[in-house]
Amino acid sequence: MSWFPDLGTVTMIDSGEHVRAVGWLSAKQPFPVGDVPTEFLGRLQQFARKWGDSVDALGWGVYMGLHCCELCGGSMTSGNFGVPHGDLLFVAPEMISHYVEVHRYRPPDQFVTALTESPLPGTEEYRAAVAPFRRLHERYLEQQRQERVERAARWAHEQGGSEESIAEAGLRFFGGSSPEISECIRQALPGAP
Image (cartoon, rainbow, N blue to C red; front, side, top):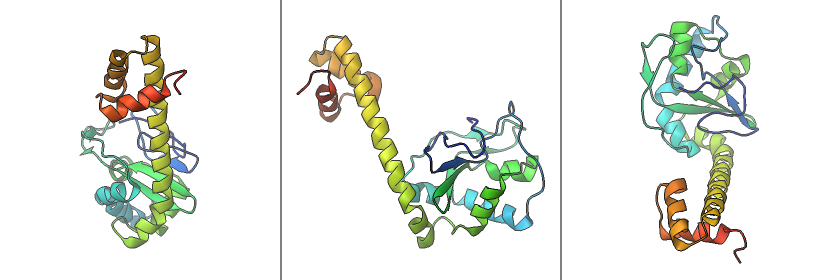
């Protein structure tokens, strides 16, 4: 699993000024340890179990593959979830409940408060609370797609800008060369009308 610093604004699933990373641990990075309130651990485990409902409500993709705990190798998980709190979205891997329970990881107090106060994934209240973050994520994905189109167009231009280079750019940057992708690349070519 990738390491991201607690309360940073970047994770593998989402990023932005509204995002706060929590629980993206690595065996190569120190992390805070300590006790957490008993009720917090139970609620954290509920969020971890409901990660699929969180992903659905937030419009995140599902990243296939299991992640093994780098600290002990004794747990495998694959999900991520979001915890809304005001204008912030705390983004955590499903593995966080294992880190807290087994390795005594102590998440930031802001996350403890947010998780305690947030509605549970799978409820209408949760969907309403994360709706603004879903819209921000959709904009983020569109921006990433547009940047990829522009990189593909620059590459196709460097290769001569032919239909063959446009199709090859689609394969290289998008894994396929559908007519839609080819048209986007064609329109983004330097000097295109």
